[in-house]
Amino acid sequence: MAKRVFDIVFALFLLAFLFWLIIISVIIATIDTHTNGIFIQERIGQFGNKFNIYKIRTIRESSAIGAISISKTGQFFRKYKIDELPQLLNVLKGDMSIVGPRPDVSGYYDVLEGERRKLLELKPGLTSIAAIKYSNEDAILNKQENSLLFNDTFIFPDKVKLNLDYYYNHSIWGDIRIIFETIRVTLFEEELL
Picture 1 (cartoon, one colour):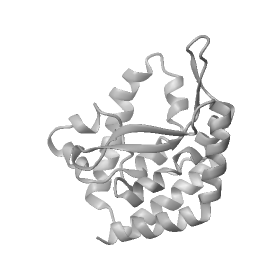
Picture 2 (cartoon, rainbow, N blue to C red):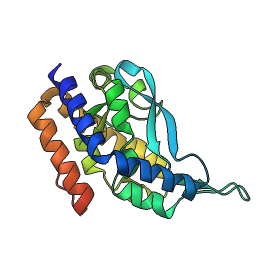
Picture 3 (cartoon, rainbow, N blue to C red):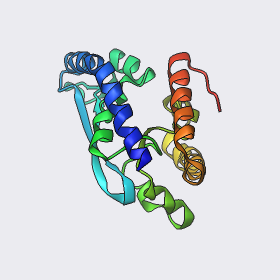
Picture 4 (cartoon, rainbow, N blue to C red):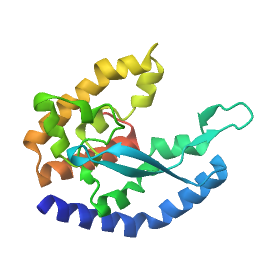
C-alpha cells in the first residue's frame, strides 16, 4: 500500500512538473515521424496481465521502401528517456509502478518458470536496477552479430537475476535510491552498478 501511495504522489508530482515537456515532445514526434506522436504497445504486466504501455514515438517509417529508423529527435528522446514519460499515466492507472522490472512484450516474463515466475507478482516499473545496468542496451545489441540471441541468452537472464534480487529486497528507500541513480545515469551517462 505504501508503494502505491508513493507511486501516485511521485507520478502526480512529475506530471505537474513535466507535463509541458510531454506535450511539446508529442508534437515534435508527430511532426518528425509523420504519425501521431504517441506509441501504444501491448506489454505483460503484474500477474501476467496484458496492458497497453504509452511512449512517445521515436521511429519513422519510410513508406517508399518500408524501412524503419529511429528519427534524430527520437534518438534524443531515447537518450534522455523522454520517450518514457507518458508511462507516468500507466503508473496513475495502476498498470505500472515507478520502480520495478521494465515491462516486456509477450514471450519473456510471462513464460518464466519456478522461482523466476515470482517477478510477475511485481508491477512493472519505469526504472529498475536492470534498466540502469542496461541503460545503453541498444548500443550493446547493435554490436552483436545476432542481437536477439544475445538478448535471450545473456541480457534477459541477467535482468531476471537483478529483478529477482529486487523482488526479495525492495523498499521505499531502495526505490528512492534507484530513482536517483536513474537520473544520474540518464543525465550523465555513467553506469553506477
